[in-house]
Length: 66
Image (cartoon, rainbow, N blue to C red; front, side, top):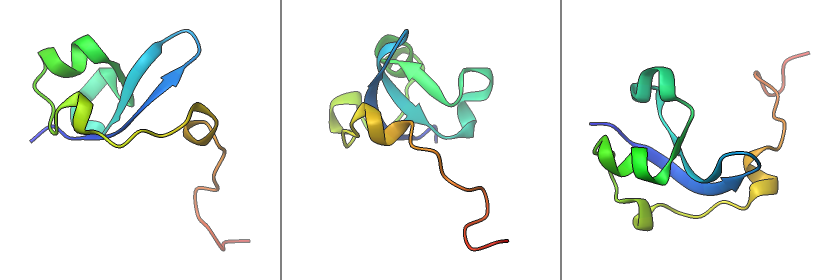
């Protein structure tokens, strides 16, 4: 199953969904129309909303590793 993780709004892309890697070349973000067209679950409106500043927050690849 193709899975969406959350929805957000990004500069240059607009309203979109963060998806898992099953989206292939479209990962990691899909615009609303493509998300719906490709049949990702849950529905776009059911995805939790993540504010733009949280979606782009840098995170270490390996937390706690020095």
